[in-house]
Image (cartoon, rainbow, N blue to C red; front, side, top):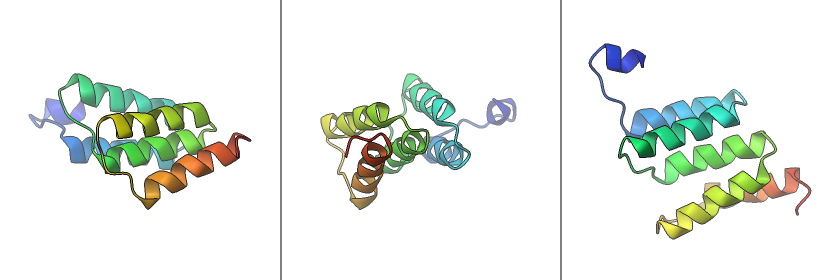
Length: 98
């Protein structure tokens, strides 16, 4: 909102940075909210965006949500990387699913 008040429109990079900040601050719900808002604005999340959201879920103990995001990445044809797999595996481990 602050960006828009200044006449700036958020883009994929700013949303990814905000989601990453939420991940670092343990705010997984806010991270997912931003991911949804981003898509409602017609912006396509990239690998970095999804990795940050998966990590946020992992840190919040939300392994099922993390795996759901993992599946969404595959469905969108995004190229999964070592960060993606590490975050998903860690989420499962923290949730007792590994």
